[in-house]
Image 1 (cartoon, helix red, strand yellow):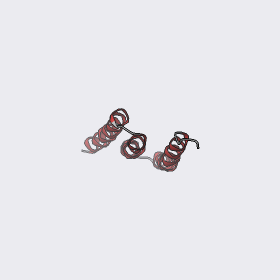
Image 2 (tube, rainbow, N blue to C red):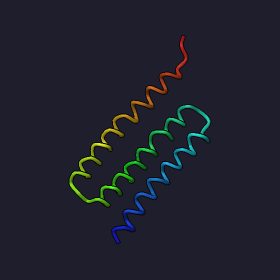
Image 3 (tube, rainbow, N blue to C red):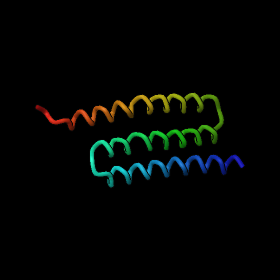
Image 4 (cartoon, rainbow, N blue to C red):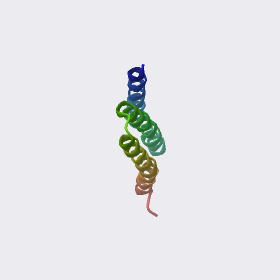
Length: 91
């Protein structure tokens, strides 16, 4: 039963990342693409890391997964902000 849950988490995370990649190609403007490039992959990575942590089920893996998630959730908005500032027109 646990392998079904783990597989479901990893597949759902992969689906969210795939949808985000499609959104990067299909959305018309910069801000829509930034939204697709930060929100969905962050949630997809959360699901994948949770599935990996449940698969290995050791405290060290849970700690590493926690640090990975903290890094992703701190750097994704900063990267999106930096990208949007780089496309801002100069006066």
